[in-house]
Length: 251
Image 1: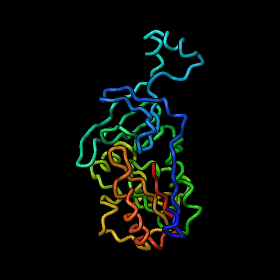
Image 2 (image 1 turned 180 degrees about the horizontal axis):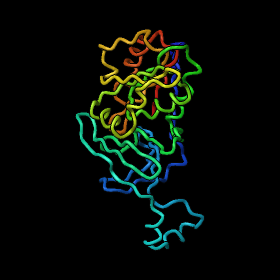
Image 3 (image 1 turned 30 degrees about the horizontal axis):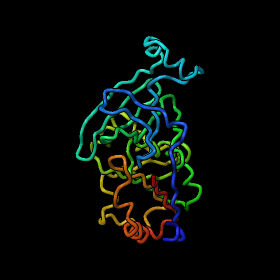
Image 4 (image 1 turned 90 degrees about the horizontal axis):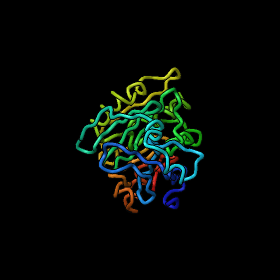
């Protein structure tokens, strides 16, 4: 893929292996297992038993009462179906999560207490600003703004433009995930500008518009079909020939 353009950097990121055995047991039809066969990276939500020094046999022998005491409480803040997604926002004492589509994959997370590092792939985006020229950066697939939040914390002068096709998702993110706060200028003048539109539409001419683009586009737990087509990638390169760095998540 790197041969398509000398200025094109494609970063393949992988979810952390330490989250492989965590799952979400809730009212949803299926548990949220971290399944490596899925293309969408999954950030673990461990709402079940916490880690213990007991061996497996001892854990199995724990009483239902002990298990109940060790569970972290969680609840659904809002759930709605849009044209593009099944949108569910889940709250816990420590974090809030945005789950999308029938897979109930986690597309955004906000940690309470002011910690914006996530321990998942969103953190990788923070390495983009130092290696690109000055200029605005686009995020294709804004979701609830997890990446934008961390980037503005670390790089408060950044001018970010977040693209999200789902208007209802943006409304919920503003209401429950603090997205509207990112749309206000920081003390250093950086901010997030939100575009509710299809970032990959041919009508969107971004040639020379951005210093870098982060592509984080998924549907039904998989990378969009058009992003997996070589010819489509060639078209993207031709459109953004003036962009120095493109981060593209491929799982």
